[in-house]
Image (cartoon, rainbow, N blue to C red; front, side):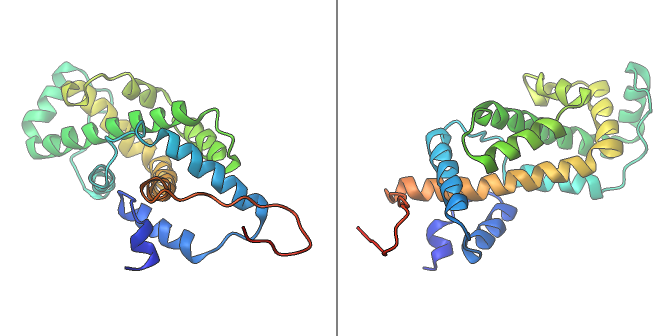
Length: 212
């Protein structure tokens, strides 16, 4: 088995690719190494609380939704025009409903990550959390986070969210996916450290090399 396979507990394709990048590009300073150690320790402590609803399938569904051409949604959805859309554009609505469910799980999961790590002592992780907060700071995304059961969003709600996602969320969504993929890669390292009972090395300043 390669070193990559030994440490690869990432759940997403992008996470696996980022893990390869981590292992191929060693850190250049003790400060950076210490910060990553803090990040991994924090992920180890919270690995069981890490949102499980975000999967590789979730990300693939979201990416496919942006690529797929569907009939235009009503710009101001109400009960009547939403119902008409569902009837006339039945296949597009079915895809939309399925996709919105995954978008809601993703948004809720990213909010959970913010709550888990908003007191992080890792500069890198803290920076990601701040980016996530900023990228989620839009009213429709806050509405999504309040949804208890994504499968139960009504017709008008699905079209309301789909309109926003198609017109306004693509760029920020891909930024969030990128952050999540990096977290997924480091979470994989944290899981490997726990599984194999690895201890992180302690660095001290010294004129002479010292290995204990």
